[in-house]
Image 1 (cartoon, rainbow, N blue to C red):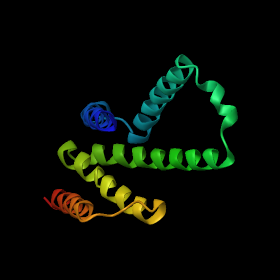
Image 2: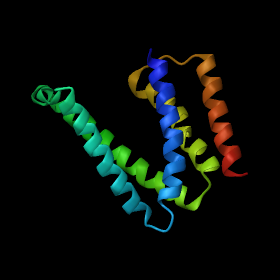
Image 3: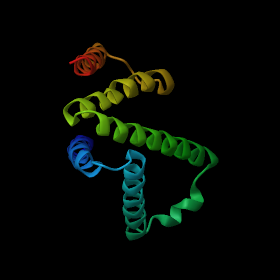
Length: 138
């Protein structure tokens, strides 16, 4: 079932890239990121309250808070750089290069989370990196 959500994530990420490229025309990319973030903030909290899961906040540990905040900061930087890259480049190059994050995530998951590394995974990582390099220097 996880793969359905992953495919939906990929679909919406692709739609996001095209919509963002149109939306950032003629405005500061940081302003565009801020507007997008407010929309996501309202949508996320709306879902939390709709599902009545806001009561779980009191159960968050210090580790939960620290790593969720760090993850939020990383997401913020990612979005800022992504929108700036979209403003300067083509969606057909920026979006796939941005997905080099998949290869980086796999490497980080092996190093920091101890996830297994198979030959198939190594080949996939190398192909993703090679594809990104090809697109950068196209």
